[in-house]
Each structure stands twice: as structure tokens, then as C-alpha cells.
Image (tube, rainbow, N blue to C red):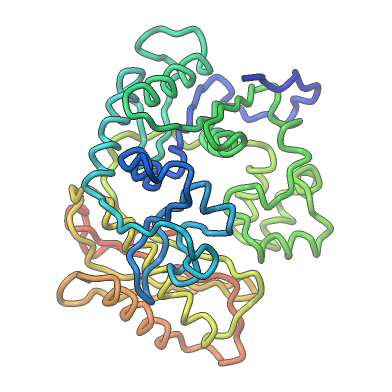
Length: 372
């Protein structure tokens, strides 16, 4: 593994450079587990999904991705793209068991582990238990342990904060390791297209392009006030991302307060055109519900989020008498919330999201947590 050469521009480096964060992301986790447990499937396109009109892809092996198959894609489309793929229904209890193995490995190195899902987590290894000299050494050893004990590959990113570590973990996928040193932040980020920044979808990319902003370096020269005036709260986040600033701590053992999925459309949509996307978003949320260990209880409230072409954010929520018990029920409630949006039919929407909140263990059952 080679690290980036020293950078010469450091003025915009994040002020929390002393922190050492590792983001570990398993490679095509569900599909890789299936290929491991079915050796005859190795090297073949494998799609983890239930069959059916409303089913979505939970995971696709890298062999299937060559054909354009991706997670959260409708299973029917995946079948059209790769008719020779092996389709297998997800086995979440088995995936949870493997995930528990992997998390046990993480805890050998630090207690500051923040799982994001069954297949990825942040680790703060500023002070690691074995006393290894560098965060890079910790990441290398974790990946080796995972490979030796589970026969699975993991990619990892090492950086001074969470957002950079997450970008880094995707840099050399699959089965890669990439390091962003504190003094390299500016030079690493500058040439990247803004789409590489977390949270920058197609519509935001187009809005930035209209301002002449295509790369992170071009985004960085715009003042904070200008970005906030144009993009609201997202403007502040864009300003920070362009400088590699992320002051969030790695927070272990945080009870879930909300769960959501959202999508930014490639082009603005009418309300009628938004409706089909809600079914897919509900399926994505429900897939994550299925992978949870249930410790937080059931979610009682369904939330719909919309953002108009003018960057106005609208939310609607509903708490039914009993918690949603199926993907179809969740999707139906989301569609009902869409019908409650009393905006002119000419309104166009750039983003939609579906979420669950008000989990049983929440301190304030009537409080609406921030989603998305």
C-alpha cells in the first residue's frame, strides 16, 4: 500500500488533525458471504434479493456489478441486466453472525467503534489497544484479521476525521487500503469532482455547476455566506466538506433514534413522478430494519421528506395506531403522506426521503428526531 506524497498546501486542513479515524467497509458483504458459503458461486454474478415486482437488490457481487447491477435497484431490473446471475434470498441471521465476528475484531483494537450497518463502521484508533505505532498499521492488521477469520475482504480508509476516512475507504475498493495524512487533505480534495463529496447528489452537482463549480478546489473559493445564501444549511456543510472539516466524534453504542433513506433525482420531478421513488425508498429503509438487531425496538412514526427545486424542505409525519409491520405498509403510509403535501401541482421536487423514527426506547416518544 502506497501513501500519497506530501502536499505543499496545508492552510485549509481540518483543525482536528490529531484524531486517527479508520472506516472499514466490507466488500459486497452479503454477496461475499454467499460466495464464501457456496464455493461453486465464486467468480460468478450473485445477486442477493427476493424475487418479485417490489423487491430490491440487497447486494450484488462484483461480478454482477460489471453488468450494472447495484444495491437498491429493483430486482426485476437486475434480472434484465444480468439474466444469468444467481439470485438468492437474503439470510440476515447469518449476516448478523458474521458481522458480530467482525465487530469483535474491531474491539480488540479500540472500544470506540461506531457501527453504521452490518458491514461498515468507524473506529477511533487515536489510542489503540495493542499499541501499534500508526493508524495505518492498525487498519492493515484489522483487514488481515478479518480475512483470516472470516475469509472475507474488507476495504479501509484512514484519515483525521470520519468524512475523509469514508471517502478513503472507497478509493481502492475492493480489498484496498487508502490513507489521507493531515498534511495531504487539501491536495487530495482539490481535484475531486464535487460529486465525490458525501451528500452531493445529481441535483446539487448541477446547481453547483451553474455557479461554475465543478471541482472541490472551485467550491473552496466561494465564501461561506454565499453558499449559505444559495443552499441554506447545506451550504455550510459544503463549505466544511471542501476543506476536509468534520468534527463529529466516533460515537459507540448509540441507540437508534431514526432510520431513513433519500434520493436526489437527476432532474426535478413532479409529485406524480416522485410517487414511484417512495416505494423504492421504503424498500431500502425496510431492508435496513431487517438487518437491525432489534435492540432499539420498533419505530412508530413514518416521515416523508421532500425538497423542492427551490431548495425548500417539506416534511410530513404520521404515527399509526400500530407500528408499520411490512415494507408494503411503510410504502403505503409514505404515499399517503405525499398526498398530504398541499403544494401547487406545478411544483417540482429535487429530493425525496422516507424515514422511520420514534423508536420505542426513545426518551421522548412524542419528539420528532432530526432525520436525513
